[in-house]
Amino acid sequence: MKDTVAEREQAALRALYEQEDFVRSLGHLTDEELTQQLVVQIGLQKKVVNRWLDSGDCFIISGAGKIHLPSCPSMLRFVDRDFAWTPYLRHLERVRDWHGSDNAPDMPTFLTRADAESLKRYTVCPNCAPTLDHTEKRSGVKGWTSLKAGSLKSKHFGTVFSLADGTEIGALTRISKQETIEGLEFTAEFEGHSPVTDPETALMYRTGLRSDDDGTEAIKS
Image (cartoon, rainbow, N blue to C red; front, side):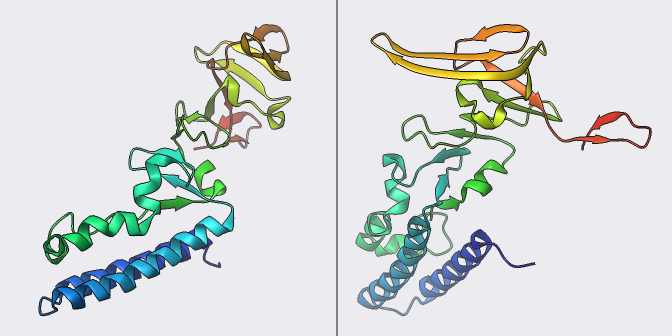
C-alpha cells in the first residue's frame, strides 16, 4: 500500500526534528554557527508548509481538536515559520537547552479534508469557519453520527434523522437558507415532522449498519 501524502509529510517532519535535535546538541557551535544551522532548518520547514498550502486541500488541527483554515489568524504563529522561530533566534539559550520542553516552536499539524472527516470528533473554528461536513463532530452513541442542522447538505437527502433525545423525525427532504433583512432564515424539512428552523439543533443518524447471519441489522463495532 502506498504511503499517503500526510504520512510522507509526517515522516519528513520527524526527520526535521531529528536533525534539529542533532543541531541543538552541538554545544561547541558558536551563536553564529548555530543560527546558520537553524536558518537551514527553518527553510526546510517552510518548504513543508508551502507544499501543504499549495495543495489546496489543507486544514490545521489544534491540540484541542479544533479544525482551522491555514489562513486563520490564530494559526499564524504556526504557519509563519519565520515568525514562529523569531523568539528562539533572539534568545539562543532557549534553543541550546535541547533537553527542555520548549526549545523549538511547534509545527502545525496539517490534515487533508479526508483526514479531518475521518476523525471521530472535532470542532471547527467559528472564526475562520472551514467548510467541513460538521461544525461539531462527536463520537456520541456507537453507530450514530451527530451534526448540527445547519451542517446538513444535499448528500443527506433521504437519510432518516433523529433528535438528540432519540426521537425519530424522518428522512430529510429539503434544506432552505435565505438571507433577509432580519438575518438568515434556515429551514430543514423532514418526512412526518415539523420543520427544524434552528441551525444549532443537534441531529443524528445511524451509520455503520451491517447484516448479521440471522438477517437482522446490528451496529458495526
